Image (cartoon, rainbow, N blue to C red):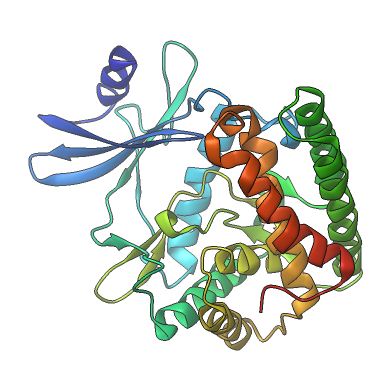
Length: 318
């Protein structure tokens, strides 16, 4: 792996790069300090057990990363957010193809701290909702330009099949699997409702977790658009809410989004897409985490607090 990282660094105009490991999920991510100037290096090499099979294989990893960088370049010009600047390599390209086929990219570092659930304020929560609305508005219509993941009704059946695989491999009980598949049926019905309403779909960040929002002195800045794609705007709103247990904070996110977007966010859609975010995690990560001590207990908790209320039509997010 060290050789691959050094190969990636050699693609750029560094003089004395010093690496700090950040995380490994769908990408291996490092901070690069080059004589006091900081960058983020990402190599598309998913951690063992992570799968994106539910999205299909029509788009290559290289295309996904290249179009992510192009989308960020576009967004920097049309959205009032200080998004990271992609850095082109020695050949002038946004993405480098390494010897093992893995794509790699480099972005400017954003100074600040990641969003913290324990210290977030109501004002920051409202700004988080407004930030999502700004992204949605700025990227509207670009789903036909950039090759990205699709978070529409076409995702439901592959997710059900992934859950069946987890059950067949003994990772999740058949009872819990059927419960989650029923929840997916409810989510699908909400998606179909939104399909009938103009202006409810577009480009999403799709991963606005705490670690993907940087708090600076003046702004909240979204980072890591690697899972971004085309889908329902309410998905981003609900997935942001899922990062916070405090319902007051969740409500402030909703208010901020509604004020900036002029779209009302009804609770039934929030409940559905909140559950979708959890199910996406399960479908992509179950092979990696099913042996962990917390997994079985957490699946039970999610079923009791998220999937069963969704199926029963009981509001549970707000």
